Image (cartoon, rainbow, N blue to C red; front, side):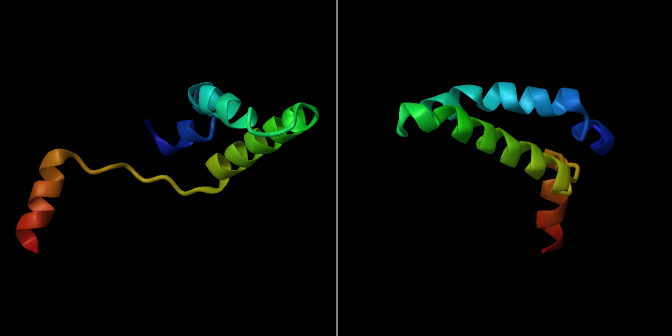
Length: 71
């Protein structure tokens, strides 16, 4: 996936969909009255992280092997 696509709303939604079960599970550890606010804060932090992080292409298996040979 190109870096430009990683900042798209569809990519952000895909990440949130993957993390939604974990977010919901963690929210059960807090008061019922605070869950909605906390969920929104967590989602905001995730989106902010996606937008501000610099993503790089991961090396392939063979690239890793070649790098190990040079060490």
